[in-house]
Length: 116
Image (cartoon, rainbow, N blue to C red; front, side):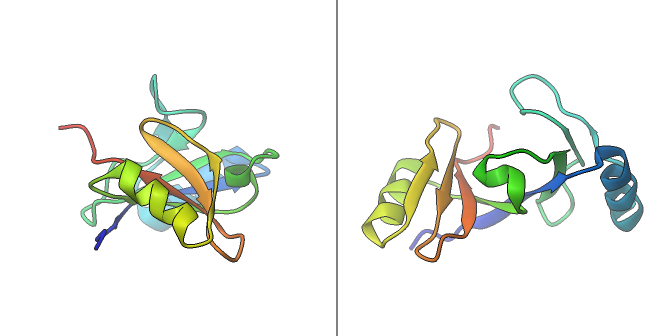
């Protein structure tokens, strides 16, 4: 059993300023510009639930068109192999996270345990 934890949800935006105001207002936590190694865009601090919310400019990639949930798993390599074993696909492999699609074509990401 993988026991994934929702660690992050990424939202693409046509107007990033508008999206940042929206999510900042809804969550009561203004998304801040990401630092080195975090990718493009902005994100909130990790909430009590253990999940953060990110915003980035809409693009053409699988995580650039729809919201993208990140599921943290204890063994990234094992979880990635299960994706393919059960009819999903790997869109963008990585060492820290991997973008996938489920058997129905829905994008999601798997991430390894957060660094201590």
